Length: 401
Image (cartoon, rainbow, N blue to C red; front, side, top):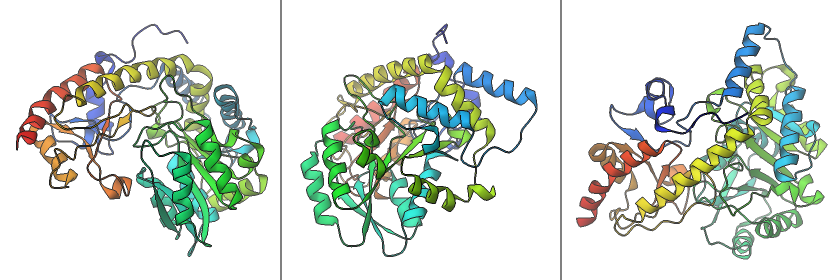
């Protein structure tokens, strides 16, 4: 596609539609006049090639069943994308369509974890990793991680946490909410340790297209054939192509027996589980026809990130590091949150500044999240500036005591 307009300008944000349709803590669920920098979902419309593909398919009028593992075109498009953008050598037969990345995580957990089992999960991290492990009846064992945690330190943390009941290691790269993009060397050391210990690896890579220069995303399963055999990759299309409402993701698994078990547990072959044909059509158009749009989106986000960091560094006592990937930022606000109640701090910011943020609560991010806020900057510059202009005087009043 050719970029003929600025898809990420103030005028490109459809506020009236967002107030009706954007849920999950966003515009449709906020009091009137509140700007939500909350759930990680862009404020922008879906790019034109995706819109056109959906309209074309609907007008053709046939909405039949699709193969249980996903349309062949869908699976081929994912495999091609992984080859081209990551050097990850997978094939269409290794791809399984899921009705969202979160659902894919749940299927993997159900397939390989049960009562008495344990899984190592970094902390802090998005609550879905812990949630899906626990929903399968297993125990999520936290391994503390910070932005500066080295591979050696993380391995030491895992060594201290592993037991005979440990079956899996869950990773998140790029990391939500810390914004870290792990290096090849870091991932290789961690993954090789897991393989030596006989653990399966679940690599959550749903943020892997949102990475800022000079950093590069490395797919865990691309590190070696042995690591690939022991890894299932979780991938999605909500963060990169704004398709959250279409509920579509995928799992990539190169071990045929592991893949077979995943499909069996999902119950897709009985049609109990499956992904809408329209969602798959949207993904095919995204991966094959929307690369220029995505590249422009990442450039916009990098500018938004830099602006957000500059504004946060003006807040008294707040500590912030630029995220290397994702479009969320996780500043340390303990100087403002003197009572250790980030939920109350966020409520005050919402009430007085009319801006909604996500508190760094253990129920959202696990251990190590207290004293932080999470801010999503996947909006236009005008909206972001207005939000910070509202927040700054309230923050200064709070800091002054």
